[in-house]
Amino acid sequence: MITKHKNRYILVESTAPLDIRNPAVSQGLGIALDLQLGQIGRMESSPKPVFQYNQHAFIIRVNRGFERRLMLATAMVKEINGQRIGLYTIKTSGTIRTLIEHCKKIY
Amino acid sequence: MEYFDVALFDVDKGLQARLGYSRIYAIGKDIALSASPSQSSVPIIVRSKDQNNLARALKDPGVVAIIFEDSILNKKLIGKAAESRKPILVPVSAMLRMDPRERQSELSRLRKILASAHSLGARCILVTLAESAEYLVSTGQMAEVSHMLMDTGNSKFVIFGGDIL
Image (cartoon, rainbow over all chains, first blue to last red; front, side, top):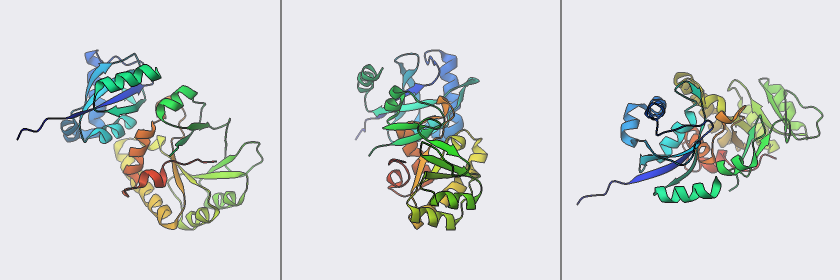
């Protein structure tokens, strides 16, 4: 039996503008998460920024079952590419669409 | 369950709601932070290294909660806090921004204190006590911090949530 790979999506708000479409910023975020999760944790959870809603809000995709670990890791990220930053996880969902709908309500 | 936090600055209402808190109390506006019990028009939180000072603060009716410093809190004081029904606030923002090695030792110290508090029936509440927006965390992140600090299944309800005042 082939089991479908499932993801969870986390809506993240940053205190400073963060453009995850910029490869340097996306890489900086990856390095910051690496420091907290470790390489094994990163491989297990496979976090990937997938959608930018506005300058301060973006969505990260993560393997299902590892979303809580990623939430803790984001709480410990205080610097990306030398810039002081705070990351808040606003909502977790199984689909990007739900998070975008939530963004429309709160921003 | 309603969630509350304490910060060293005034957090705007929109951000409070997005983070999932019913209210984030601002030190200096909603609550006073003092090293010893004193006269104040707003409720007081006493933060001190001195265990005797904290014990005295627990007897003062104007004091709503205590904060210990240097991760040192003796069992006698935890027992007194349990008797007085006043919460012990545990600031987490400093721990979250520590170097990973320092954080490990801080974590083990806090775990011991929280386990003692839990067994003695004292109420502990995690707060950020953030000095700027970078050090705030959402309720979801705070729940994960509480799970990290206590291995019990109901850690979220034991040490996270509930009003301070």
